[in-house]
Image 1: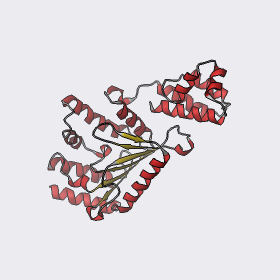
Image 2: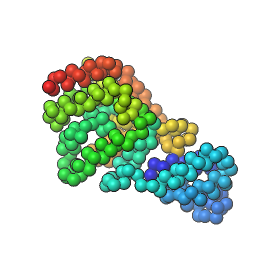
Image 3: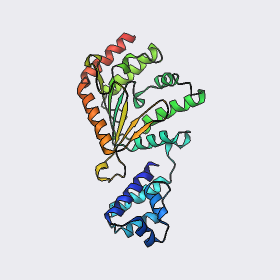
Image 4: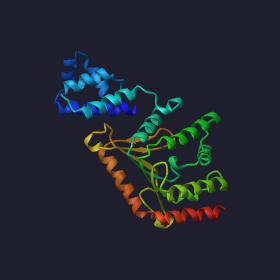
Length: 282
């Protein structure tokens, strides 16, 4: 779905660059205008011949652009790694976007999913009665796979409220293991991606993130539409999550994230706090 969105957005931009309307494109290709509209909105698959026909119509001759868009069309028809899971549409959308992001700015009141151990994840899921045993096991496997499949070039910038490491989720042994994992990731230069972890201490008082966590996904060239994806804010809730894609909303959340980073402990002080909490759990 993400590849389809990238391709649709890129074709929409190229049509705009060519100063053509959907109706004009449809007339040239002798198809219904609804087909072009659905392609650009990622509401249907697009074949390689269709891509080549559109590129020719728009006068796109650069081989790099042609190869990139043809590659997206082919990849869109391949199965995604998460297809084996029974995912809701909002979660499927998020996982696809997460895997394509070049930067993830994640502020949470719990340990973020990409940094959770399996036992910590299980304990978090235990708080929600909607999960039966099989659903819980699948959710744990999915979260582990998200960590494994994340692009190693992705920058994962994490800020947590101190609540995240002080709240004993799953018992002392589970939290001790989780603290060990956070310390290892925070201190290592060889993590699954480029990870930065900071904690906003209780001594920092009230702050903009005291009410809710949020995640901002950013993509290469989003401002110029060269990636075909717009930056997005994801806010997880008890029921359906919220997506915010208006540039002004994304900008506001990025500003809030920067403010939280400004209140957070340095990397070294964060690691010291994590080790202190680990010792208290021993």
